[in-house]
Length: 74
Image (cartoon, rainbow, N blue to C red; front, top):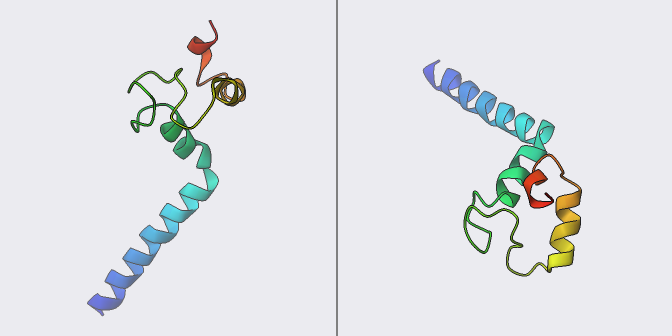
């Protein structure tokens, strides 16, 4: 009986996690694109394009997220 309860709890956690990742994918992209994850040229500077991305491409990307990159356009 204890093994079944443990398996159901693990499955519930996995299903809940997948459901949250499916319903709120923009939060994952926000962390990835904000420089918090260390992918910017200078960590903490989210206005600087990450490696492999041109300045024009990065400005286009930032224009799609004005709430995240407001200070980059000011």
